[in-house]
Image (cartoon, rainbow, N blue to C red; front, side, top):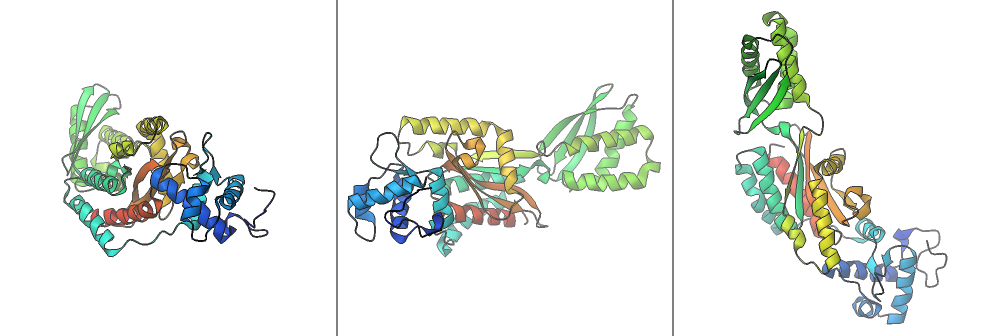
Length: 362
């Protein structure tokens, strides 16, 4: 924090939110110029933009104190200033006006996402939604969803070795997922057939999560109907379905190419390459997005606030979406440079999440 306040930058005993009007105006112009151009802005240009006329020298005094507060910095030897990550966070939290979308904007997003409801599968629907969201925001769009959203149609056990079998899960949307299963010693082929029949009588039309619950209840009530080895096959199948939190998640990314637009320097290209590398580290992205499932509304991570993307200097704006029961089943949003158009992207992501919830039965 600054130890002096020669121009009344901050009201006595107040924090950053109490910047005086002149300081706020200058700081806002620096941030908005950065968001628009990505370039540093100098005192001479700022003096022309602000509402109350000030000389470049007076603007420089304010900029000096804003820099002492950690809100702006001078890149290299440039006379201009850029906002720091702290500055961007302060701007987003305290100064930026995030208005609701207008009627035409809502209609545009609805029209863009209308094809989601006609998609053949949940994954196809989400992929389509991301392509549209990426186009609307000019950033990379991401979604984290549960693999278990797909509804099951059929299951089959195929023996691979005496103590290994392949579990083939067929979804109503035509998707097929294979899992290798360890079998108890001495399981005959008849037990595999009986286990398949038992499961197929109970899983059709259910998600994996719903099927597991149904089967656990059925197993409790039907033990007398099944021989011991068949029970063990089914229990092993259920155990393989539980997987783990991360194994049951999938990450879909669309719009990488948008990140290559409007690059100003070689360091911008290096930043985007770094972001591409980060996006390939799917486990890290899944961990990050998973945090948003435990919160309501839009979450915003700027730069190093999110360790995964700290090197690429990227921002992440994400919101959860739900299913018909109101349960949060995934997260969608955008990842892009820290100079995203936050005022537009935040309500767009929020509204897109609500539209996807509605179209997927939420």
